[in-house]
Every structure is written in C-alpha cells, then in structure tokens.
Amino acid sequence: MELPPHGPGEVRRIAGLARIRLTDAECAALSVDFGRILEYVGRLRARDEAAAAEPLVHAVPSGEPAASLRPDEPAPEGPAAPLRWEEVRALVPDSAEGRLRVPRVLEEGR
Image 1: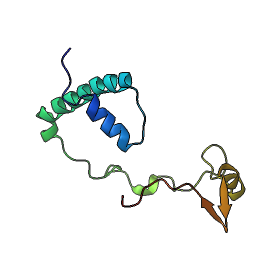
Image 2: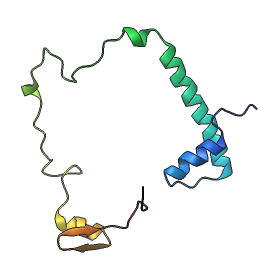
Image 3: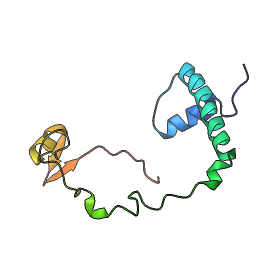
C-alpha cells in the first residue's frame, strides 16, 4: 500500500496540536482518511460548477422579510434553557467571588 502524502507523522503532529493522544494504529488509519478527505476536496476545487455558483449573500431570501423570523431569545425551559448560577457552580470544581475557576490550558508564550 502506498503511503499517503500526509502520513502518520503529520496526523501525530496535528493530534499533538489538539492535545489528542493517538496510538500508532490510529495515526495510520487516520492518515488514510485524511488523504481521502484531501483528495475529495481537491476534486471539488477542480469542478467548474463551483465557479458558476452565485455566492450566498444572506441566509434569508430577499423575498421573505426578516420580520418573519422568530426572536433570538433563550428557551424558558427544556434542554435549551440556560442554566441557573447554582447549577453552573455545581458543575465546576471551584468558584469564588461570582467567578468560575478553571485550570490553565494554554502554556506561556502561546
């Protein structure tokens, strides 16, 4: 089997940037998938129809007034409802003075 242009080393580098640990087998499998995705994107870029398509200017068609859209408000109940402060505090390991304390993720200089 031919090695893809973006082999396991490239997959391991990208996984490292995302702080994801992968086994050698996972890197090899993902490099094949990565190569197929890039090949497909290359085929899409080569198609002439893409150049002929008009760009989308706005998600709402011009014939439909924006007033017909629902207002952007939080749901009053259900899974989309916002959490109360007490619920949020119960989910985090530490809070003080109305703020949530979370572990540092980024290293200095990045």
